[in-house]
Image: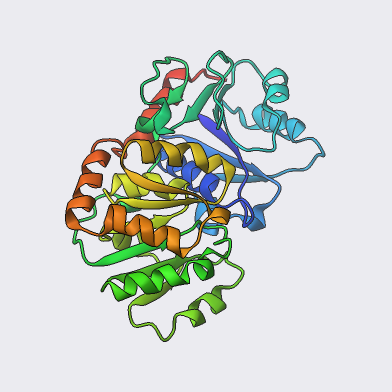
Length: 329
């Protein structure tokens, strides 16, 4: 039996992008008959719809996560470790575990000379790099099934999403921009999650606005995003989902690891990357709107640049690599 052990960071502080992309991999691997185990020390911080995908949840017991990893490998006959963590020391890990175990890891700074693992990084900057060892570029981007098979019904609406962990106060900060869009006859859909600290305050802020709606953990988010003329988003997983759905973007980065891919989308003409949230105000977004999003012609031009970059088959490609690396324990 092929068994995969997942280790990842995910909470309200760093967001849920790690859990989101691992969820897509787990879902795809089930089609290949895999068993998936999750090793975690913070079960309470993970969404229940994510943890329910796993065959087994193992709680960290020892001070050293490396001991727990090795215990899991031996006890459960693990053939693959998938690492999506900023905390675990990979250099130590690769020297401590069985050589028969394949390691797949998400890394923001891929070391192309590393042959002890397969690195996954779907930043569009890597699209033209030929590398048989690592899984680089947008063809490996991970798109949840709920974003697939949607029928486009474009309307005069805009979607706003600044991440699952929290909005960094951006919904309040850019209220003036949302009101400006409302004056242009555009309906604004603001999406927030249960991790936001001021959920009720955000909802109250727009109660008197007929053309600004706030949605909390809305299951129809993919459908609403799909039908948007453009989106206002942070620079994480949502950018790949927007590209997949052919939705142009205004991108505002909220974390350092989002900058490079946001810049890449901008250089490809798929989005307007405005910079870090701390350096921006509503006037910057209004200027961007007039330059890039104020006419159907401008919107269509940006959509053309997005075509074919994200096809939704990344999970299948990654799992096939895992299959090819499989060594019976």
